[in-house]
Amino acid sequence: MTKKLLFLLLLSFQFVAAQELALVRQQGKFGYISKTGEFVIQPKFKVAKNFSEGLAAAEENGLWGFINLKGEWVIKPSFSDAKYFNSGICVVKKDDQWFYINKKGETLTMPASEKVFDFEEGVAFIKQGDKIGLINTKGEVVLQPTYQIIKPFEDGFARVKNNDKWGIIDKAGKVVVNAEYDEIGNFFKNSTWAGKGKQFGLVTANKFTVLEGVDKIWDFDFQYVTYARKNGKIGFVDLKGNWIVEPKFDKARAFVKNLAPICEGKKWGYINMKGEYVVKPMYDDAEIFSTDGLAPVKEKEWGFIDVNGKKVIESKYQITAGGFASLFRNREKGFLNGIARVKSGKQWGFIKTDGSVLGGQWYENAELFQK
Image 1 (cartoon, rainbow, N blue to C red):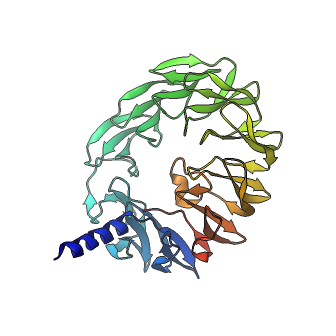
Image 2: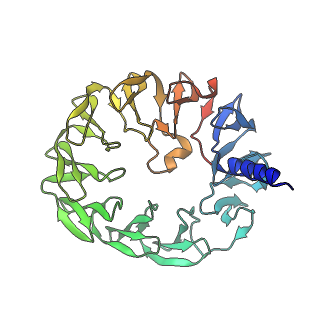
């Protein structure tokens, strides 16, 4: 084999392995399109699911199997139900029993659990009695069943409940925030928010600092600031608990690209990190900016503005995170990697940042791109 041919084959393999596909339905059948808007896998499945880790569950003759990005069967249909691959493992059902398989379709032996939980970030829950613990992909018990509740892991950390109090652990089961709070937020940059009785504040290095007068704090998600409520109004605090924007708004959402949607009365606009209006309250609703620099705004229907507040896509769509994407944290509505999933009338499709419709096509249903 020549070096040139080998290079082309490797390039082709990398392209197939890296590309994202979107599940769409056309004339009652499901298929998958690429980001060019062309069908990579023709609509031929009565039922199918999104891709995860390069494989997608699809149904044939009432049984579920898994296809690759070329539409080839990698695991033949033999299951009565199937979920999504994560950490190289998937939960499937056969003969009324749920169990784990790997990407070869081989059954995996795991510790006893009263329920079979999906893997996420390399770990899965096990339940014994009324307690929850953790196992890894090798089937090793990482954390003996200890907690009443363990929430899904987010960036390597999970909220846990024990004796009716909340804390946070890492994937090794190590406690990073003691379970002593009535409410707790996500773990972000070694900090979180928490509520203890009627007091709310921030926890850093396991130390609770009260924010006087605050009765609600939202999760830190995108930047080093989040929004909090005091005396019925919402403002923004940083990770040290300092007010960077005084509480004076009725509603708010997260800062992204140093801009945050806020609501006064019934209208939404956008402020900068100084609390100054970049976009005056004029919209019926507004969402956070995407990394593409566009944000959805609503005037009966949804359109998009840029970071200067200029309307760049006409307000004529419906938007939603939707479907499988809603399982993923921080899947914002609107644009994601240059493409937004929108609804026009009764049809679904995708638009690009210039407002053009991907492939010029609309579908009976469409999900976000996955790989």
